[in-house]
Structures are given as structure tokens and as C-alpha cells.
Image (cartoon, rainbow, N blue to C red):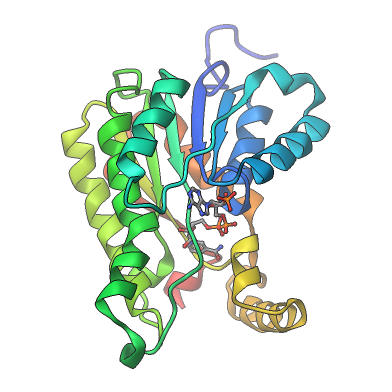
Length: 260
Ligand SMILES: NC(=O)c1ccc[n+]([C@@H]2O[C@H](COP(=O)([O-])OP(=O)(O)OC[C@H]3O[C@@H](n4cnc5c(N)ncnc54)[C@H](OP(=O)(O)O)[C@@H]3O)[C@@H](O)[C@H]2O)c1
């Protein structure tokens, strides 16, 4: 028998804004939030992609149509601060912000790195999230029940050839969440650090067959014996939203890859 006093579903009726909600981790978080009776607003740069995402969500959750909202916002531009202001002024008050938006990975040998490529690589994964924190802090319901969750990555702890820019950016995210947790208190700020996850992000890096082969080989090296799905890693974002006692932390969901 279930208790009438124990609030098991802490996300019910909360409003979650998901930047990057049209694909990969963000889309998985969007589905999980709907399954937990939250209201969601999804955002990405492409109105077309938002439209097809809404269709997918409505077909999977037909009763949730009224709980899904959306606004496009391009986070890649120099004008991203104004775009984020405009996004929040339309979205209004939120209980949780999840940031998974990202462009193609800037992977390259050290010799190919330029100042311009570093700056371009930092924009979506560190500059925009900090601006979202700055502006979003005025729209988050005050209190430790509210949260901002950013996205880091296992590369922040494990070096890999050609990943210098991403490693620097993700290390920056890990440090920034601690500082943001201090500056945004009592609202909580954390990050999820995924290992390899099978999402659309890899479509820009691999041809389909190449990806299947590489993922099979890499998955065998993981303690779980496979590559994670976005739905699995979405649970880490849900945890960080629900535990009103965790802040300034980076939580790994990495198939055990960080310890072997
Ligand atoms: N997948 C992995 O294996 C993995 C592992 C570790 C860390 N991560 C990190 O996790 C984050 C999310 O990865 P993912 O795999 O979920 O990526 P993804 O499937 O490619 O999703 C990226 C999201 O960002 C949005 N986006 C792209 N350009 C944008 C722009 N200019 N403005 C606003 N939104 C934009 C995309 O939507 P639109 O195209 O519609 O704009 C999409 O919703 C990234 O930072 C990634 O580095 C991923």
C-alpha cells in the first residue's frame, strides 16, 4: 500500500526547462520528466527539429500534450546572451533547468588547434551554460528543491588523443558547477558526467557501420559490457533534480569506464 504522506514523485507538476531537449540526452530527460508527471519546455536551435520532437513525444505520451511547451534558442552565437534572455522571458518561472545542448565535438590533433577553434569549442559547452546560469537564476523558483544541471563528460578525468579542447571545456564545467552552487544558493547546481552514450551526437563523427563496430568494441571494455543508452544516463539528471541535498557535484554515469 502506498503512503499518502511520502512524496515519492518529487517531479510531479514541476516545470523543467531542457536546453538541448530535441536529441540524445536531453530528449531522454524530456521523456523521463513526462513519465514523472512534470511539465517540460524543450529548447534547441532548430524549430523544425523541435516540431518533430514534439510529435515524437506526443505519440509516446498522448495524455501529456498540455504538459509540453517549446521555444527555439540558438546558443551558438555571439548574441547568445540576448537569445537566452528572450528564451527565459517567454518560458517564465521554472523549477529545474537541464542543459545538454551541444554542437559537434571539436576533436583535432594539437597541431590543428587555433585560437578561433578553441573559442568556438567553448561556446556551447561552457559559455552558454554559464549565461544560462546567470539569467536562469532569476527565473528558478527559490529554494533547494530547484536545480540547474549541466553536462560534463568522462574526458574531464581521462585524457584521450585529439580531445584537448573538449577536455579543457569539460574540466571547466566541473569547476564551474562548484562555483555556481555557491553563487546560486540555495538553488542547487550540479553536472552529469556521462561516459560514452549512444546518441545522435556521434552521427557527425562516424558513418553508421563504423559507429556500430567501434561501439561494439568499446562496449566490451566497459564494466557493464555495453555502451549506455541515453535513457539510462537520463536517470542521473533525474536524481540530481530530485535530491534536494546534493549541490556542487559532478555525478558520473559512465558504464564503469572511469575506473578501468
Ligand atoms: N553522447 C555521448 O557519448 C556523450 C558523452 C559524454 C558527454 N556528452 C556530452 O553531453 C552533451 C549532450 O550530448 P548528446 O549526445 O545528447 O548530443 P546530441 O544528441 O547531439 O544533442 C545535442 C542537442 O543540442 C542541440 N543544439 C545543437 N546546436 C545548438 C545550438 N546552436 N543552440 C541550441 N541547441 C543546440 C541539438 O538540437 P538542434 O540541433 O535542434 O539545435 C540537440 O538537442 C554534450 O555536451 C556532449 O559533449 C555526451
